[in-house]
Length: 119
Image (tube, rainbow, N blue to C red; front, side):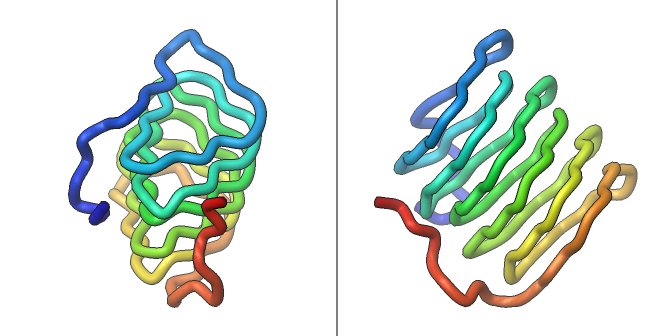
């Protein structure tokens, strides 16, 4: 799936909590609470109200709101939109931070050394 296509295949909605490893194909949106590891070559969307903590290895990450504390490696791109709060390390060939996003951490804009491990 190209990072520009965002038809959702799964949703972790508000009020839900998940802890563990998440592997998926397609686009997944998290609006609830997630703790753990995400592995995919596709698109992860983090919505308003989300609270995500862990390690993310994805094709593309779009953060539309919520609080993200993570080590993120995206093969294609990372987009951070207001009112997102992001803490951690970001690594992708393309990183976009919208004016007003709260970000604390490190950014590395370069191709990944390795592909996301989506077993």
